Image (cartoon, rainbow, N blue to C red; front, side, top):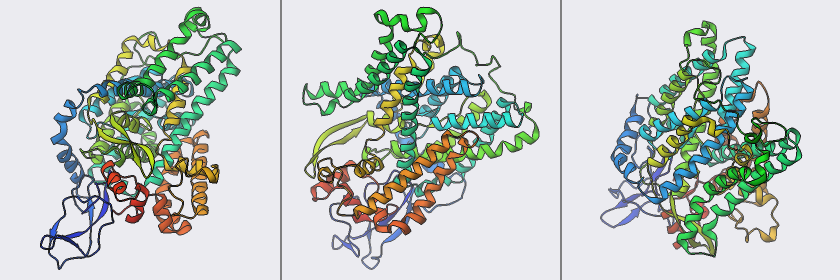
Length: 600
Protein backbone atom coordinates (compact mmCIF):
# COMPACT_ATOMS: atom_id res chain seq x y z
CA UNK A 1 0.00 0.00 0.00
CA UNK A 2 1.23 3.46 -0.76
CA UNK A 3 -0.07 6.86 -1.65
CA UNK A 4 0.82 8.05 -5.18
CA UNK A 5 4.65 8.09 -5.28
CA UNK A 6 6.27 11.32 -4.17
CA UNK A 7 8.13 13.48 -6.64
CA UNK A 8 11.37 13.16 -4.68
CA UNK A 9 13.32 10.21 -3.28
CA UNK A 10 11.69 9.43 0.09
CA UNK A 11 10.91 6.77 2.67
CA UNK A 12 7.61 4.89 2.70
CA UNK A 13 5.71 2.86 5.22
CA UNK A 14 4.51 -0.24 3.33
CA UNK A 15 1.30 -1.63 4.82
CA UNK A 16 0.95 -5.42 4.62
CA UNK A 17 -2.00 -7.06 2.90
CA UNK A 18 -3.17 -10.67 3.22
CA UNK A 19 -4.23 -12.41 0.01
CA UNK A 20 -6.03 -15.00 2.14
CA UNK A 21 -8.32 -12.67 4.09
CA UNK A 22 -8.17 -9.77 1.61
CA UNK A 23 -7.55 -7.40 4.49
CA UNK A 24 -4.68 -5.25 5.71
CA UNK A 25 -2.68 -6.93 8.47
CA UNK A 26 -1.45 -4.83 11.38
CA UNK A 27 -1.51 -1.02 11.09
CA UNK A 28 -4.31 0.15 8.82
CA UNK A 29 -3.92 2.80 6.08
CA UNK A 30 -5.53 6.20 6.67
CA UNK A 31 -9.17 6.46 5.66
CA UNK A 32 -9.68 8.02 2.26
CA UNK A 33 -6.20 7.46 0.88
CA UNK A 34 -5.87 5.66 -2.44
CA UNK A 35 -4.65 2.05 -2.48
CA UNK A 36 -2.25 0.97 -5.21
CA UNK A 37 -1.39 -2.67 -5.90
CA UNK A 38 -1.36 -4.18 -2.37
CA UNK A 39 1.71 -6.34 -1.79
CA UNK A 40 0.80 -10.03 -1.07
CA UNK A 41 2.67 -11.22 2.05
CA UNK A 42 2.26 -13.70 4.84
CA UNK A 43 -0.09 -12.87 7.70
CA UNK A 44 2.72 -13.53 10.15
CA UNK A 45 4.79 -10.59 8.98
CA UNK A 46 2.54 -7.73 9.89
CA UNK A 47 5.06 -5.07 10.92
CA UNK A 48 5.35 -2.05 8.60
CA UNK A 49 8.65 -2.16 6.75
CA UNK A 50 10.67 0.98 6.14
CA UNK A 51 12.21 1.10 2.69
CA UNK A 52 13.84 3.66 0.44
CA UNK A 53 12.19 4.81 -2.73
CA UNK A 54 13.82 6.06 -5.89
CA UNK A 55 11.05 8.47 -6.74
CA UNK A 56 9.16 6.34 -9.23
CA UNK A 57 7.85 3.48 -7.17
CA UNK A 58 11.04 1.39 -7.20
CA UNK A 59 12.63 0.56 -3.86
CA UNK A 60 16.30 0.55 -2.96
CA UNK A 61 18.54 1.61 -0.12
CA UNK A 62 20.69 4.70 -0.51
CA UNK A 63 24.16 3.74 -1.66
CA UNK A 64 27.46 5.31 -2.75
CA UNK A 65 27.94 2.67 -5.42
CA UNK A 66 28.76 4.63 -8.58
CA UNK A 67 26.08 5.37 -11.19
CA UNK A 68 23.25 3.43 -9.50
CA UNK A 69 20.93 6.43 -9.45
CA UNK A 70 21.79 7.49 -13.01
CA UNK A 71 21.12 3.98 -14.31
CA UNK A 72 17.75 3.87 -12.55
CA UNK A 73 16.85 7.28 -13.98
CA UNK A 74 17.67 6.20 -17.51
CA UNK A 75 15.82 2.90 -17.06
CA UNK A 76 12.77 4.78 -15.78
CA UNK A 77 12.67 7.49 -18.45
CA UNK A 78 13.88 5.60 -21.54
CA UNK A 79 10.55 3.82 -22.21
CA UNK A 80 8.84 7.23 -22.38
CA UNK A 81 11.35 8.96 -24.68
CA UNK A 82 9.42 8.46 -27.93
CA UNK A 83 6.14 9.37 -26.26
CA UNK A 84 7.77 12.56 -24.94
CA UNK A 85 8.06 13.72 -28.55
CA UNK A 86 4.63 12.43 -29.59
CA UNK A 87 2.98 14.34 -26.74
CA UNK A 88 4.42 17.53 -28.19
CA UNK A 89 1.94 17.47 -31.10
CA UNK A 90 -0.94 18.96 -29.13
CA UNK A 91 -2.41 22.49 -29.42
CA UNK A 92 -1.70 23.19 -25.75
CA UNK A 93 2.03 22.63 -26.35
CA UNK A 94 2.16 25.57 -28.77
CA UNK A 95 0.64 27.98 -26.25
CA UNK A 96 3.01 26.66 -23.60
CA UNK A 97 6.00 27.15 -25.91
CA UNK A 98 5.13 30.77 -26.68
CA UNK A 99 4.41 31.43 -23.02
CA UNK A 100 7.82 30.09 -22.03
CA UNK A 101 9.58 32.10 -24.75
CA UNK A 102 8.56 35.34 -23.07
CA UNK A 103 8.89 34.16 -19.48
CA UNK A 104 12.41 32.93 -20.28
CA UNK A 105 13.73 35.66 -22.56
CA UNK A 106 12.49 38.52 -20.37
CA UNK A 107 14.62 37.55 -17.35
CA UNK A 108 17.49 36.61 -19.68
CA UNK A 109 17.50 40.07 -21.27
CA UNK A 110 17.09 41.86 -17.95
CA UNK A 111 19.83 39.86 -16.24
CA UNK A 112 22.01 40.42 -19.33
CA UNK A 113 21.66 44.14 -18.77
CA UNK A 114 22.68 43.74 -15.13
CA UNK A 115 25.68 41.59 -16.07
CA UNK A 116 26.73 44.03 -18.78
CA UNK A 117 26.85 46.89 -16.30
CA UNK A 118 28.19 45.12 -13.21
CA UNK A 119 30.92 43.17 -15.05
CA UNK A 120 31.93 46.29 -16.99
CA UNK A 121 31.06 44.83 -20.37
CA UNK A 122 32.56 41.34 -19.91
CA UNK A 123 29.17 39.67 -20.41
CA UNK A 124 26.11 40.88 -22.29
CA UNK A 125 22.89 39.92 -24.09
CA UNK A 126 24.57 37.73 -26.71
CA UNK A 127 26.28 35.57 -24.08
CA UNK A 128 23.08 35.16 -22.03
CA UNK A 129 20.85 34.37 -25.04
CA UNK A 130 23.43 31.94 -26.42
CA UNK A 131 23.64 30.20 -23.05
CA UNK A 132 19.84 29.89 -22.91
CA UNK A 133 19.68 28.48 -26.45
CA UNK A 134 22.55 25.97 -26.18
CA UNK A 135 21.73 24.60 -22.74
CA UNK A 136 17.95 24.64 -23.26
CA UNK A 137 18.36 22.57 -26.42
CA UNK A 138 20.74 20.14 -24.70
CA UNK A 139 18.46 19.63 -21.71
CA UNK A 140 15.25 19.21 -23.71
CA UNK A 141 16.84 16.52 -25.92
CA UNK A 142 19.10 14.66 -23.50
CA UNK A 143 17.69 15.54 -20.07
CA UNK A 144 15.64 13.09 -18.07
CA UNK A 145 12.80 15.43 -17.04
CA UNK A 146 12.19 17.79 -19.99
CA UNK A 147 9.52 19.79 -18.16
CA UNK A 148 12.26 21.56 -16.20
CA UNK A 149 13.15 24.81 -18.00
CA UNK A 150 16.81 25.84 -17.65
CA UNK A 151 18.29 29.29 -18.07
CA UNK A 152 20.27 32.09 -16.47
CA UNK A 153 18.69 32.92 -13.12
CA UNK A 154 18.78 35.86 -10.76
CA UNK A 155 20.94 33.91 -8.28
CA UNK A 156 23.39 33.05 -11.11
CA UNK A 157 23.56 36.75 -12.01
CA UNK A 158 24.29 37.66 -8.41
CA UNK A 159 26.90 34.90 -8.21
CA UNK A 160 28.60 35.95 -11.47
CA UNK A 161 28.84 39.56 -10.36
CA UNK A 162 30.33 38.33 -7.08
CA UNK A 163 32.94 36.30 -8.96
CA UNK A 164 33.81 39.35 -11.09
CA UNK A 165 34.30 41.49 -7.97
CA UNK A 166 36.40 38.71 -6.43
CA UNK A 167 38.59 38.38 -9.52
CA UNK A 168 39.03 42.14 -9.71
CA UNK A 169 40.05 42.34 -6.04
CA UNK A 170 42.65 39.58 -6.58
CA UNK A 171 43.91 41.26 -9.77
CA UNK A 172 43.05 38.13 -11.79
CA UNK A 173 41.73 38.15 -15.36
CA UNK A 174 38.00 37.54 -15.03
CA UNK A 175 37.16 35.28 -17.99
CA UNK A 176 39.82 32.54 -17.42
CA UNK A 177 39.03 32.60 -13.68
CA UNK A 178 35.27 32.37 -14.42
CA UNK A 179 36.03 29.45 -16.73
CA UNK A 180 37.86 27.56 -13.98
CA UNK A 181 35.08 28.23 -11.47
CA UNK A 182 32.69 26.50 -13.85
CA UNK A 183 35.12 23.65 -14.62
CA UNK A 184 35.48 22.83 -10.92
CA UNK A 185 31.71 23.13 -10.45
CA UNK A 186 31.13 20.76 -13.39
CA UNK A 187 33.45 18.14 -11.87
CA UNK A 188 31.61 18.44 -8.55
CA UNK A 189 28.29 17.97 -10.35
CA UNK A 190 29.60 14.82 -12.03
CA UNK A 191 30.71 13.41 -8.66
CA UNK A 192 27.39 14.21 -6.97
CA UNK A 193 25.43 12.55 -9.78
CA UNK A 194 27.74 9.54 -9.99
CA UNK A 195 27.62 8.75 -6.28
CA UNK A 196 23.84 9.18 -5.97
CA UNK A 197 24.07 12.20 -3.68
CA UNK A 198 20.93 13.66 -5.23
CA UNK A 199 19.12 11.21 -2.95
CA UNK A 200 19.77 13.82 -0.26
CA UNK A 201 17.14 15.98 -1.92
CA UNK A 202 14.78 13.80 0.13
CA UNK A 203 15.69 16.02 3.07
CA UNK A 204 14.40 19.10 1.23
CA UNK A 205 10.84 19.62 2.40
CA UNK A 206 8.13 22.02 1.35
CA UNK A 207 9.49 24.48 3.93
CA UNK A 208 12.78 24.92 2.07
CA UNK A 209 11.21 24.80 -1.40
CA UNK A 210 8.62 27.44 -0.66
CA UNK A 211 11.10 29.72 1.11
CA UNK A 212 13.38 29.54 -1.93
CA UNK A 213 10.44 30.03 -4.28
CA UNK A 214 9.40 33.12 -2.34
CA UNK A 215 12.99 34.41 -2.52
CA UNK A 216 12.98 34.16 -6.31
CA UNK A 217 9.53 35.78 -6.49
CA UNK A 218 10.80 38.59 -4.24
CA UNK A 219 13.84 39.12 -6.47
CA UNK A 220 11.56 39.37 -9.53
CA UNK A 221 9.20 41.81 -7.83
CA UNK A 222 12.07 43.89 -6.43
CA UNK A 223 13.79 44.08 -9.82
CA UNK A 224 10.62 45.07 -11.66
CA UNK A 225 9.52 47.68 -9.11
CA UNK A 226 13.04 49.13 -8.77
CA UNK A 227 13.34 49.66 -12.51
CA UNK A 228 9.92 51.32 -12.79
CA UNK A 229 10.81 53.69 -9.94
CA UNK A 230 14.29 54.47 -11.31
CA UNK A 231 12.82 55.66 -14.59
CA UNK A 232 11.52 58.72 -12.73
CA UNK A 233 15.10 59.54 -11.67
CA UNK A 234 16.84 58.73 -14.96
CA UNK A 235 14.25 59.84 -17.50
CA UNK A 236 12.10 62.85 -18.28
CA UNK A 237 8.56 62.71 -16.98
CA UNK A 238 6.94 61.68 -20.31
CA UNK A 239 9.07 58.53 -20.97
CA UNK A 240 8.96 57.71 -17.24
CA UNK A 241 5.16 57.75 -17.25
CA UNK A 242 5.03 55.73 -20.47
CA UNK A 243 7.39 53.17 -18.89
CA UNK A 244 5.13 52.95 -15.84
CA UNK A 245 2.10 52.33 -18.08
CA UNK A 246 4.00 49.64 -20.01
CA UNK A 247 5.13 47.85 -16.85
CA UNK A 248 1.90 47.95 -14.90
CA UNK A 249 -0.18 47.35 -18.03
CA UNK A 250 1.76 44.21 -18.95
CA UNK A 251 1.46 42.81 -15.42
CA UNK A 252 -2.24 43.63 -15.08
CA UNK A 253 -3.27 42.30 -18.48
CA UNK A 254 -1.21 39.11 -18.08
CA UNK A 255 -2.75 38.42 -14.66
CA UNK A 256 -6.27 39.19 -15.92
CA UNK A 257 -6.12 37.06 -19.06
CA UNK A 258 -4.31 34.13 -17.42
CA UNK A 259 -7.24 33.90 -14.98
CA UNK A 260 -9.78 33.57 -17.82
CA UNK A 261 -10.64 29.98 -16.83
CA UNK A 262 -12.53 31.38 -13.85
CA UNK A 263 -14.58 33.84 -15.90
CA UNK A 264 -18.34 33.38 -16.15
CA UNK A 265 -18.52 34.79 -19.69
CA UNK A 266 -17.71 33.03 -22.98
CA UNK A 267 -17.63 29.26 -23.38
CA UNK A 268 -15.06 26.98 -21.77
CA UNK A 269 -12.98 26.48 -24.93
CA UNK A 270 -12.61 30.23 -25.46
CA UNK A 271 -11.74 30.86 -21.81
CA UNK A 272 -9.05 28.17 -21.87
CA UNK A 273 -7.63 29.61 -25.11
CA UNK A 274 -7.47 33.11 -23.62
CA UNK A 275 -5.82 31.80 -20.45
CA UNK A 276 -3.23 29.82 -22.43
CA UNK A 277 -2.20 32.71 -24.68
CA UNK A 278 -3.03 35.63 -22.36
CA UNK A 279 0.48 36.30 -21.07
CA UNK A 280 1.99 36.08 -24.55
CA UNK A 281 -0.61 38.53 -25.89
CA UNK A 282 -0.03 40.97 -23.01
CA UNK A 283 3.73 41.10 -23.60
CA UNK A 284 3.42 41.50 -27.38
CA UNK A 285 0.76 44.21 -27.00
CA UNK A 286 2.71 46.38 -24.57
CA UNK A 287 5.99 45.88 -26.43
CA UNK A 288 4.19 47.37 -29.45
CA UNK A 289 2.53 50.28 -27.62
CA UNK A 290 5.63 52.57 -27.65
CA UNK A 291 5.74 52.36 -31.45
CA UNK A 292 2.14 53.53 -31.94
CA UNK A 293 1.35 57.12 -32.91
CA UNK A 294 3.04 59.90 -30.98
CA UNK A 295 4.55 57.38 -28.54
CA UNK A 296 7.16 56.65 -31.20
CA UNK A 297 8.78 60.02 -30.45
CA UNK A 298 9.66 58.65 -27.00
CA UNK A 299 11.60 55.65 -28.34
CA UNK A 300 15.35 55.47 -29.04
CA UNK A 301 14.52 54.41 -32.61
CA UNK A 302 13.13 57.88 -33.31
CA UNK A 303 16.31 59.74 -32.34
CA UNK A 304 18.96 57.11 -33.04
CA UNK A 305 20.00 56.36 -29.45
CA UNK A 306 18.65 56.22 -25.90
CA UNK A 307 18.50 59.51 -24.01
CA UNK A 308 16.71 60.93 -20.98
CA UNK A 309 13.88 61.88 -23.34
CA UNK A 310 13.28 58.28 -24.48
CA UNK A 311 12.19 55.05 -22.85
CA UNK A 312 14.80 52.42 -22.03
CA UNK A 313 15.50 49.61 -24.48
CA UNK A 314 18.17 46.93 -24.30
CA UNK A 315 21.67 47.88 -25.43
CA UNK A 316 22.70 45.14 -27.87
CA UNK A 317 25.50 44.79 -30.43
CA UNK A 318 24.75 45.20 -34.12
CA UNK A 319 25.83 41.63 -34.89
CA UNK A 320 26.42 38.26 -33.29
CA UNK A 321 29.64 38.66 -31.29
CA UNK A 322 30.94 38.59 -27.73
CA UNK A 323 30.56 41.67 -25.56
CA UNK A 324 34.31 42.37 -25.58
CA UNK A 325 35.09 41.08 -29.07
CA UNK A 326 37.12 38.16 -27.67
CA UNK A 327 37.13 34.72 -29.24
CA UNK A 328 34.34 32.34 -28.33
CA UNK A 329 36.58 29.79 -26.60
CA UNK A 330 38.22 30.78 -23.30
CA UNK A 331 41.86 29.83 -22.78
CA UNK A 332 41.96 28.16 -19.31
CA UNK A 333 45.78 28.27 -19.32
CA UNK A 334 45.63 32.07 -19.10
CA UNK A 335 44.78 31.73 -15.40
CA UNK A 336 47.60 31.52 -12.86
CA UNK A 337 48.06 28.29 -10.89
CA UNK A 338 47.13 29.69 -7.48
CA UNK A 339 43.97 31.28 -8.97
CA UNK A 340 43.04 27.95 -10.57
CA UNK A 341 43.27 26.28 -7.14
CA UNK A 342 41.37 29.11 -5.45
CA UNK A 343 38.58 28.81 -8.03
CA UNK A 344 37.56 25.60 -6.23
CA UNK A 345 35.98 27.76 -3.51
CA UNK A 346 33.51 29.71 -5.69
CA UNK A 347 33.06 26.51 -7.71
CA UNK A 348 31.87 24.77 -4.55
CA UNK A 349 29.51 27.67 -3.79
CA UNK A 350 28.07 27.42 -7.32
CA UNK A 351 27.61 23.67 -6.80
CA UNK A 352 25.72 24.26 -3.55
CA UNK A 353 23.55 26.83 -5.30
CA UNK A 354 22.76 24.52 -8.21
CA UNK A 355 22.24 21.46 -6.01
CA UNK A 356 19.52 23.37 -4.25
CA UNK A 357 18.26 25.64 -7.04
CA UNK A 358 18.06 23.06 -9.82
CA UNK A 359 16.68 20.23 -7.70
CA UNK A 360 14.10 22.51 -6.10
CA UNK A 361 12.99 23.79 -9.51
CA UNK A 362 12.78 20.16 -10.61
CA UNK A 363 10.78 19.28 -7.49
CA UNK A 364 8.38 22.16 -8.08
CA UNK A 365 7.76 21.34 -11.74
CA UNK A 366 7.01 17.73 -10.71
CA UNK A 367 4.87 18.57 -7.67
CA UNK A 368 2.25 15.91 -6.85
CA UNK A 369 -0.52 18.39 -7.65
CA UNK A 370 0.38 18.12 -11.36
CA UNK A 371 -0.25 14.37 -11.39
CA UNK A 372 2.74 13.53 -13.63
CA UNK A 373 3.09 9.88 -14.69
CA UNK A 374 6.56 9.35 -16.17
CA UNK A 375 8.78 9.78 -13.12
CA UNK A 376 11.79 11.98 -12.29
CA UNK A 377 15.49 11.69 -13.17
CA UNK A 378 17.32 13.71 -10.52
CA UNK A 379 20.73 12.04 -10.81
CA UNK A 380 20.87 12.04 -14.62
CA UNK A 381 19.58 15.60 -14.82
CA UNK A 382 22.20 16.83 -12.36
CA UNK A 383 24.85 15.14 -14.50
CA UNK A 384 23.43 17.00 -17.50
CA UNK A 385 23.59 20.29 -15.62
CA UNK A 386 27.26 19.56 -14.91
CA UNK A 387 27.89 18.86 -18.60
CA UNK A 388 26.20 22.14 -19.50
CA UNK A 389 28.35 24.01 -16.98
CA UNK A 390 31.47 22.57 -18.60
CA UNK A 391 30.26 23.84 -21.99
CA UNK A 392 29.32 27.31 -20.72
CA UNK A 393 32.60 27.59 -18.83
CA UNK A 394 34.70 26.89 -21.91
CA UNK A 395 32.59 29.34 -23.95
CA UNK A 396 32.83 32.01 -21.26
CA UNK A 397 29.05 32.41 -20.93
CA UNK A 398 26.87 32.23 -17.78
CA UNK A 399 25.96 28.76 -16.44
CA UNK A 400 22.33 27.69 -16.23
CA UNK A 401 20.11 25.55 -14.07
CA UNK A 402 16.41 24.99 -13.48
CA UNK A 403 14.38 28.20 -13.46
CA UNK A 404 11.94 29.26 -10.77
CA UNK A 405 9.12 30.11 -11.35
CA UNK A 406 9.43 29.22 -15.05
CA UNK A 407 9.83 25.45 -14.47
CA UNK A 408 6.61 24.98 -12.46
CA UNK A 409 4.83 27.53 -14.67
CA UNK A 410 5.84 25.41 -17.68
CA UNK A 411 4.28 22.28 -16.22
CA UNK A 412 1.20 24.23 -15.16
CA UNK A 413 0.79 25.62 -18.69
CA UNK A 414 0.72 22.06 -20.07
CA UNK A 415 -1.98 20.85 -17.67
CA UNK A 416 -5.62 20.29 -18.53
CA UNK A 417 -7.77 21.59 -15.68
CA UNK A 418 -11.33 21.44 -14.45
CA UNK A 419 -13.15 23.40 -11.78
CA UNK A 420 -14.49 21.06 -9.10
CA UNK A 421 -16.04 21.42 -5.70
CA UNK A 422 -13.79 20.25 -2.85
CA UNK A 423 -15.05 20.53 0.73
CA UNK A 424 -17.67 23.06 -0.33
CA UNK A 425 -15.25 25.24 -2.29
CA UNK A 426 -14.72 25.50 -6.03
CA UNK A 427 -11.10 24.75 -6.87
CA UNK A 428 -9.16 24.23 -10.08
CA UNK A 429 -8.01 20.60 -10.36
CA UNK A 430 -5.48 19.15 -12.80
CA UNK A 431 -6.99 16.29 -14.82
CA UNK A 432 -4.02 15.60 -17.10
CA UNK A 433 -0.67 16.93 -18.25
CA UNK A 434 1.00 16.80 -21.68
CA UNK A 435 4.48 15.68 -20.63
CA UNK A 436 6.65 16.40 -23.67
CA UNK A 437 10.02 17.66 -24.93
CA UNK A 438 8.91 19.89 -27.81
CA UNK A 439 7.74 22.83 -25.70
CA UNK A 440 11.11 23.03 -23.95
CA UNK A 441 13.08 22.62 -27.16
CA UNK A 442 10.80 25.02 -29.02
CA UNK A 443 11.23 27.87 -26.54
CA UNK A 444 15.01 27.41 -26.55
CA UNK A 445 15.21 27.42 -30.36
CA UNK A 446 12.93 30.46 -30.72
CA UNK A 447 15.05 32.36 -28.20
CA UNK A 448 18.17 31.25 -30.08
CA UNK A 449 16.73 32.64 -33.31
CA UNK A 450 17.08 36.10 -31.78
CA UNK A 451 20.83 35.72 -32.28
CA UNK A 452 20.33 35.92 -36.06
CA UNK A 453 18.86 39.39 -35.63
CA UNK A 454 20.21 40.44 -32.27
CA UNK A 455 19.65 44.09 -33.18
CA UNK A 456 15.90 43.42 -33.19
CA UNK A 457 16.01 42.53 -29.49
CA UNK A 458 17.13 46.12 -28.91
CA UNK A 459 13.66 47.38 -29.86
CA UNK A 460 12.01 45.67 -26.89
CA UNK A 461 11.03 48.19 -24.17
CA UNK A 462 12.58 47.11 -20.89
CA UNK A 463 9.56 48.47 -18.99
CA UNK A 464 7.27 45.87 -20.58
CA UNK A 465 9.72 43.16 -19.49
CA UNK A 466 9.70 44.69 -16.00
CA UNK A 467 5.95 44.19 -16.06
CA UNK A 468 6.49 40.55 -16.97
CA UNK A 469 8.78 40.31 -13.92
CA UNK A 470 5.93 41.60 -11.77
CA UNK A 471 3.57 39.04 -13.30
CA UNK A 472 5.95 36.12 -12.71
CA UNK A 473 6.58 37.21 -9.14
CA UNK A 474 2.86 37.41 -8.38
CA UNK A 475 2.08 34.21 -10.30
CA UNK A 476 4.63 32.40 -8.12
CA UNK A 477 2.44 32.93 -5.06
CA UNK A 478 -0.26 30.57 -6.28
CA UNK A 479 -0.28 27.32 -4.31
CA UNK A 480 2.50 28.54 -1.99
CA UNK A 481 1.39 27.80 1.58
CA UNK A 482 4.07 30.18 2.90
CA UNK A 483 2.41 33.04 1.01
CA UNK A 484 -1.03 31.91 2.26
CA UNK A 485 0.23 32.00 5.84
CA UNK A 486 1.66 35.50 5.31
CA UNK A 487 -1.75 36.67 4.08
CA UNK A 488 -3.28 34.91 7.09
CA UNK A 489 -1.31 37.23 9.39
CA UNK A 490 -3.24 40.26 8.13
CA UNK A 491 -6.60 38.62 7.38
CA UNK A 492 -9.70 39.58 9.36
CA UNK A 493 -10.45 36.60 11.60
CA UNK A 494 -14.08 36.66 10.45
CA UNK A 495 -12.98 36.36 6.79
CA UNK A 496 -10.46 33.54 7.13
CA UNK A 497 -12.81 30.77 6.03
CA UNK A 498 -14.31 32.85 3.21
CA UNK A 499 -10.84 33.41 1.76
CA UNK A 500 -10.02 29.71 2.00
CA UNK A 501 -7.21 30.30 4.50
CA UNK A 502 -8.54 28.08 7.29
CA UNK A 503 -6.54 25.03 6.18
CA UNK A 504 -4.41 25.08 9.34
CA UNK A 505 -6.85 26.31 11.98
CA UNK A 506 -8.31 23.54 14.10
CA UNK A 507 -5.21 21.43 13.47
CA UNK A 508 -2.42 23.76 14.64
CA UNK A 509 -2.77 26.49 17.31
CA UNK A 510 -3.16 29.92 15.70
CA UNK A 511 -0.26 31.37 17.68
CA UNK A 512 1.99 28.56 16.45
CA UNK A 513 1.00 29.18 12.82
CA UNK A 514 1.79 32.89 13.16
CA UNK A 515 5.10 32.40 14.97
CA UNK A 516 6.19 29.74 12.47
CA UNK A 517 5.32 32.08 9.59
CA UNK A 518 7.03 35.08 11.20
CA UNK A 519 10.27 33.12 11.61
CA UNK A 520 10.13 31.90 8.01
CA UNK A 521 9.51 35.47 6.81
CA UNK A 522 12.46 36.76 8.88
CA UNK A 523 14.74 34.11 7.33
CA UNK A 524 13.51 35.05 3.85
CA UNK A 525 14.21 38.72 4.56
CA UNK A 526 17.74 37.99 5.81
CA UNK A 527 18.63 35.91 2.73
CA UNK A 528 17.18 38.56 0.43
CA UNK A 529 19.24 41.29 2.11
CA UNK A 530 22.39 39.17 1.62
CA UNK A 531 21.68 39.07 -2.14
CA UNK A 532 21.85 42.89 -2.17
CA UNK A 533 25.18 43.21 -0.33
CA UNK A 534 28.41 43.58 -2.33
CA UNK A 535 31.20 41.01 -1.83
CA UNK A 536 29.00 38.60 0.17
CA UNK A 537 26.05 38.34 -2.23
CA UNK A 538 27.57 35.26 -3.90
CA UNK A 539 27.37 33.41 -0.58
CA UNK A 540 23.57 33.54 -0.28
CA UNK A 541 23.20 29.86 -1.41
CA UNK A 542 24.69 28.86 1.93
CA UNK A 543 21.77 30.54 3.66
CA UNK A 544 19.37 28.48 1.54
CA UNK A 545 21.25 25.26 2.37
CA UNK A 546 20.98 25.97 6.11
CA UNK A 547 17.19 25.75 5.82
CA UNK A 548 17.38 21.96 5.52
CA UNK A 549 19.02 21.14 8.90
CA UNK A 550 16.99 23.96 10.47
CA UNK A 551 13.78 22.23 9.34
CA UNK A 552 14.91 18.78 10.47
CA UNK A 553 16.46 19.56 13.85
CA UNK A 554 15.30 22.92 15.21
CA UNK A 555 11.77 23.65 14.00
CA UNK A 556 10.28 20.50 15.61
CA UNK A 557 12.00 21.50 18.85
CA UNK A 558 10.66 25.05 18.74
CA UNK A 559 7.12 24.46 17.43
CA UNK A 560 6.43 20.78 18.14
CA UNK A 561 6.96 17.94 15.69
CA UNK A 562 3.27 17.32 14.98
CA UNK A 563 2.61 21.01 14.30
CA UNK A 564 5.61 21.35 11.98
CA UNK A 565 4.67 18.18 10.11
CA UNK A 566 1.20 19.61 9.46
CA UNK A 567 2.48 23.05 8.45
CA UNK A 568 5.14 21.52 6.21
CA UNK A 569 2.99 18.76 4.71
CA UNK A 570 3.51 17.89 1.05
CA UNK A 571 0.85 18.38 -1.59
CA UNK A 572 -1.02 15.41 -2.99
CA UNK A 573 -1.64 14.11 -6.47
CA UNK A 574 -5.03 14.87 -8.04
CA UNK A 575 -6.25 11.25 -7.74
CA UNK A 576 -5.35 11.17 -4.04
CA UNK A 577 -7.04 14.50 -3.54
CA UNK A 578 -10.21 13.16 -5.10
CA UNK A 579 -10.05 10.10 -2.85
CA UNK A 580 -9.75 12.35 0.17
CA UNK A 581 -12.67 14.46 -0.97
CA UNK A 582 -14.87 11.40 -1.40
CA UNK A 583 -14.01 10.36 2.14
CA UNK A 584 -15.01 13.76 3.45
CA UNK A 585 -11.53 15.02 4.12
CA UNK A 586 -9.34 17.58 2.40
CA UNK A 587 -5.75 17.39 1.24
CA UNK A 588 -4.35 18.91 4.42
CA UNK A 589 -6.25 16.46 6.60
CA UNK A 590 -5.11 13.67 4.34
CA UNK A 591 -1.53 14.61 5.01
CA UNK A 592 -2.15 15.22 8.68
CA UNK A 593 -3.18 11.61 9.04
CA UNK A 594 0.06 10.51 7.45
CA UNK A 595 2.30 12.44 9.83
CA UNK A 596 5.93 13.29 9.10
CA UNK A 597 6.23 14.64 5.57
CA UNK A 598 9.28 12.44 4.99
CA UNK A 599 7.16 9.33 5.49
CA UNK A 600 3.99 8.34 3.75
